[in-house]
Amino acid sequence: MCDKELCALVSAKNRPELLIALQDALQCVLSPERLPFVKYRILTQLVNIFHPSVIGLLTSNEFNELFTTLFRSAPLDDAFLVLINALHSCDGSQMFRLQHIIILLDDLEKTRLESLLVDSIGRDPSDVDWNVKQGELCRLLGQTTCLVHNVFGNSHLLCLLLSRMH
Image (tube, rainbow, N blue to C red; front, top):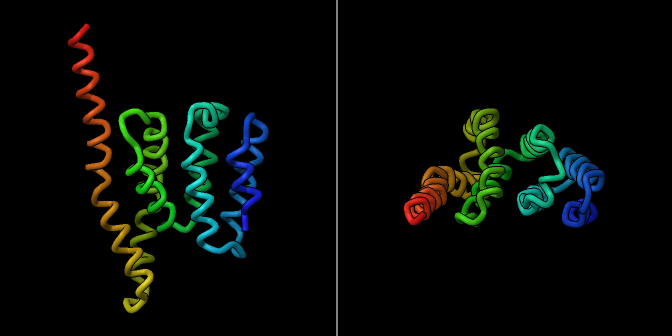
C-alpha cells in the first residue's frame, strides 16, 4: 500500500535517502496497480516534507525536476486538490512551504490544467463521485488567488510595518 514509501519520505535525513525515497514515491504514483487514495497519500506526504531541512538537500533544479514529475504523473485532480488544500494550511510564517507549493501549482496550471478540463468534459454527467470532486476542485481553484494574496498580503504589510519601525 506504499507504507514503505511514505515512511521513507518522512524519515529521509540525508540526500541519498531523500533521492531514493522520491524515486520510490514516483514508482508508486506511476504504478497502475496502486489505488488512487494511496497516490493521494503520497502527494500529501510530499507536500508535508516542504521544510528547508529536507528540501534543502536538493538543488533547485532537482526539486523542480523531481517534484514536477511526481505531481504531473499523479491523477491530475488529486494533484491539484493536494496542492490547493496545502495552501489553506499556510500562513505568513511558512513562506518556504508556500513558495514550493506555488512552484508546483504554477507548473500544473501551465502544463496540465487543460488536460484536466478536457477530461472533465468527457466524464459521465451522472458520475456523482466525479461531480462532487469537480465541484470541490472548482471551488478551491477559484479561491487560490485569494489564499495566496492573504498570505503574501499580510506578510507584505508586516514587512512594511517592521521596516518603518527601524
